[in-house]
Length: 220
Ligand code: DX5
Image (cartoon, rainbow, N blue to C red; front, side):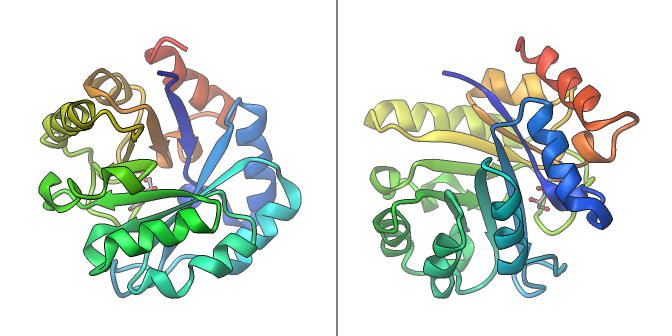
C-alpha cells in the first residue's frame, strides 16, 4: 500500500502558515495534519476552526484534522462544514466511540481514531468496521519535537495483524517523532500514513529538503 508523509503544521512557522502549507504541497505532500488542542485533553492550546477555514481557502490539500480535545462529538459537523476531509478523534475522549466514528462517516468524511501510547489496542478492536484510519501516537500528545517511543513499533505490528485478521480496509497512521530515522521503522511495521511535524518544519533545511530526506528513507 502507498506510504505517505503527512506534514503536521504544529511545528510550522505560524507567522507565515499559509506559505508553509504551500511549501508542503510543493514538496509533494497530498495531505496535512492540523493539530487541534484544547488545553484540557492535552497540556497545550493550539488552533481550531479558524485555521481549518483559512487553510481550506488557500489549498486543496486533503485536510486531516487531529482533534486532541475533549467532547469532540460537539464539533464534528462544524469542522466538516469548514472543509476538513478526515477527523481523527482520540479513543480516550470518546465514551461513545462507535457512534462518533459513524457520525464522522455520515458527514462524508474519513473517520480516524488515535490511541495514546498507554492505551491498548483492545480499546478499538470493536470499531474496525467504522474506522478508516487508526492513528498510533508514538509520543504522548500535546507537543511537537518529542522523542519517538520505540515500544510503539510492536503495537503497530500487532495492529496490522489485527486488521488483517478481520479483513477490514483500515489504514495505520503514526504520529510523533517521525523523521528520517524512525520513518522506515514504522513503515516496516505496517504504518502507511506518517505524520511528521518538527522533522519537516523545524529541520535543518527547507520543507522540500526535509520531506525528501524522509521520503528517500522509505523508498519513495
Ligand atoms: C501531538 C502532535 C504531534 C505533531 C507531530 O503532540 O500530534 O505529534 O503532530 O509532532 P512531531 O513530528 O514534531 O513529533
